[in-house]
Image (tube, rainbow, N blue to C red; front, side, top):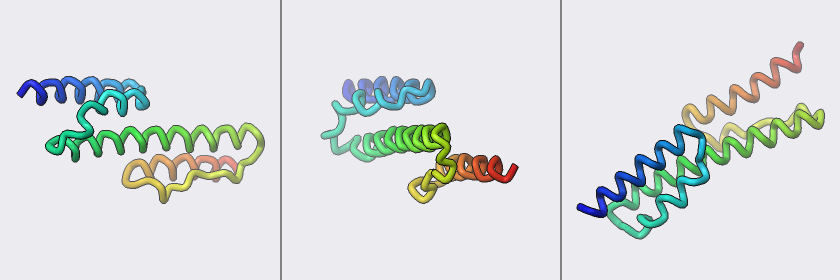
Length: 102
């Protein structure tokens, strides 16, 4: 029971971090539970969410830096993402495409 309470505290703290845009801290917080078989599925999902958000940031920064250098053909590979994350990346790509048509 004590471990479950600790996990919920870490989970809530991690969700606060995600809501506040601090994605990189999440994986460090959940490490202590990685070996717990009962929590493995939840830990894996939280870790994947953190990774996905970090990849999205990296990809958007890459696209932004390329645009600053005049490389307007750089796009984010939306196939790397699922669901609404793919919609976000497609939105970035579509925005640049529309701007190039002006």
